[in-house]
Amino acid sequence: MVEIDIEYHGKLKSTATHGPSGTKLVTVPPKDNMGDGSSFSPTDLLATSLGTCIITTMAIAAVKHGIDLEGTTVHVEKHMSTTPPRRVARLPVTVTIHKVIAKEFRERLEHAGRACPVHQTISHDTEMPITFIWKD
Image (cartoon, rainbow, N blue to C red):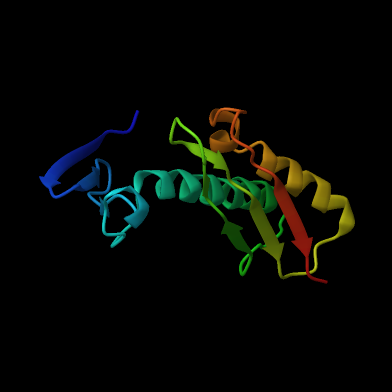
């Protein structure tokens, strides 16, 4: 179990504190939803969670096979619904691996990325296509 404490400061700004580490992050709504866009919004964090979970899960699988994924990049786009209710409708992800990886390991790493806990947790009503680009 991990505890996260959140304090609301007014003016639509909150600070979340990660219990185990004490690390803090600030959230504000985006400009299109009454915020100033000065930091991550809660839905931005959902998109961030998906992207970081994909690469983290891939990296764990890679370590088990003696593969180094350092330099891999992940790009996530957050698309909000255009009709009510307001929600994240689409989170396309592009994972670009900049190292030469043997073909027999690529499928395993892609499977690991698609099996990440965040991808498995977000409702399947949210489109989450993942594209893998192998730069070799």
